[in-house]
Length: 353
Image 1 (cartoon, rainbow, N blue to C red):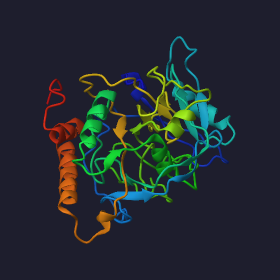
Image 2 (image 1 turned 180 degrees about the vertical axis):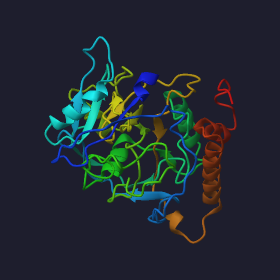
Image 3 (image 1 turned 120 degrees about the vertical axis):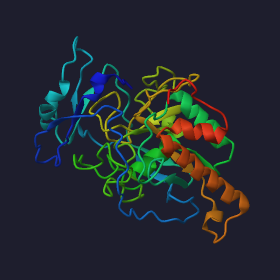
């Protein structure tokens, strides 16, 4: 995903009803740093504990059909242009000229795949109802790179945080789109410029939510790291084997980024869970702010012990460690700080404080 300053300047408001084809207003997006606001009051989001999931997680049924239905985008290609100068100005015409479109997509020099509908079946799973580090927090300013997601995966594999793990890409799609509703966007099929605003505390918009599964914001503001599973790999592009922007052949187990962001000028389809991209193999040290758009999707295997009135000591310890991981991330606004605390060693010593 391109992270130059030129690609932060255009954020396009979306049509609110595809039948009306109303004009698309152009506004200016803040820089990555400015988009991280101070914590704000968050309404009661009604996330209920139960069904064997850790606190803050919801259980999702693992069968359904997921993938992009139809064409909700007015597309503006730019690859053929020698100079790309404010292509977002063409959004109104592109949306109005595309039947059923409610969103604008200014494609960059490379375009990542949009996932078409497929029937999937995975075991029921738990997923964080609100993206990490949770309701009322700010998104980490460092986001994640292929290198730091590998470090997080190392931490999760220790078991210190319980059964938590990276979501698979199919789990992510199921949770965000809904196994029966298969929405285009987390909140519905029609893009709404009033939903899912950047720069607010996580959970600030109670309507930026899938009404079937109860998850918030995924793929509407940031994209999220996941682990490639076999169902996803087999259908990740029109003619497998597939490659994303990282130019490596997609394989089961690879770290990939699922979902779009709220930026209109991007390689992956904006605002939807039905798209993915790749940043290649993890690099060392792999730290920095280049991954600001790319957060993390955390899932877990259901465990009936979570529904007991009193938890076993090991479970209490895991939940305490998870709380500490989140607190360390929120304290400095960097997920690498949480990873360093969890692993017990510095992971990004070159990043200035």
